[in-house]
Image (cartoon, rainbow, N blue to C red; front, side, top):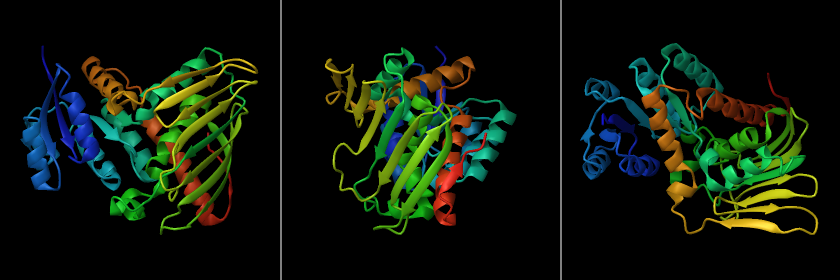
Length: 328
């Protein structure tokens, strides 16, 4: 079996999560690791029997087929553009970029190069959200409205999390995943009324958004960065006609089947987070797409769409014009 040679750019926590999964695939060879911290790069490379590289060009010359970009948010665009110019297939962790301008430029480059480019919106493969998607697609719940929240307990650890120059802004952190869930589970956004303020941190850390989707659904979306990790800090509630779906983070999911009827619940607390959070499946699909030269399940266009939503939210608050009509 010819093994696909993989390189990883960024050997921090999420980079190592992907490496741990890839190391279990019999058709993958972890070929190289890059990181600005040379000591960490060396330690991680040794752990996975890989080489340390100084740049992407060296990786390409060594025959690496695809790269994972798991470095800090603001570096994603530059690394992705370099990788595409060199002809790599690319898995780019979220956020794909931290600006809409860069996202559109990256999308153009992906189309020009014709390689596989997958964005790391792992919630699409998480057990709880796949269950909700299935019930909606089967017609067991026909969504009429929704409530979504994605809170964070603090922006203190790691210390750079509250620095918008580093992250692109609070919405580009975990909150971006649930903007993607709006699109994937419920539909495209038509208009929003966006409120945000700085309550504790230098970044805008409180958000309240009313949404109307193109299919007529209405709902609310809130995100707070100083909620002290009160569980559940991630939740999607979808309301049908006297039935509903609800998750408690990526640990539990509930399906209320109707008035006076049972609630079907699934508890994934004991399942390894790499599996239940969707990381294993998204990695397997990326490798298969590269080998088979087919379109990935989370495309560059999906990355652009969610960044367009975030861009609109920041512009609404910063301009004082809360009402937003989405393009397209």
